[in-house]
Amino acid sequence: MNEEQAWHLNRMKMKQNIHIAWDLPRLDLTDRLKEMVRHVKPYKITCYVLIGFNSTVEQDLFRLNVLRELGITPFVIPFRDYANKRTPTQYERDLARWANRMWLFKSTSFEDYTPRKGFKCGEYLK
Image 1 (tube, one colour):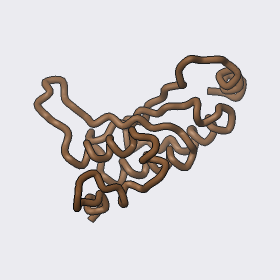
Image 2 (tube, rainbow, N blue to C red; image 1 turned 90 degrees about the vertical axis):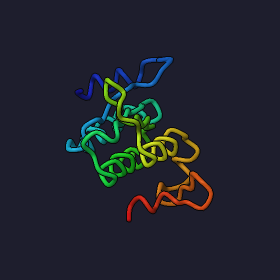
Image 3 (tube, one colour; image 1 turned 30 degrees about the horizontal axis):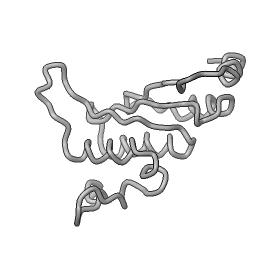
């Protein structure tokens, strides 16, 4: 995306946000996202984040923290295979629940999030 395209995207009246995806954790899209946020207001951008597919807890949190710093709205999707034999782990469900609720995502960190009584998500990082 060049500067002119980003300017036109920002000027358009849209009913929905601009949707992008950050599926592969080995790709660092930080510079591209910063460039996009320079021209398009961050509240107009939604980023799909695939977790549980060749990624670690640290990689998932890195992607979400970058999106939080830039003001981009994340939408976390736990990985499921086509045969649907793999169900999301408890960690993936907790991360998706935390990130997909904007009031939680903006107000507290994942380490301090308490999805169940007596359990903090910081234990996933140990």
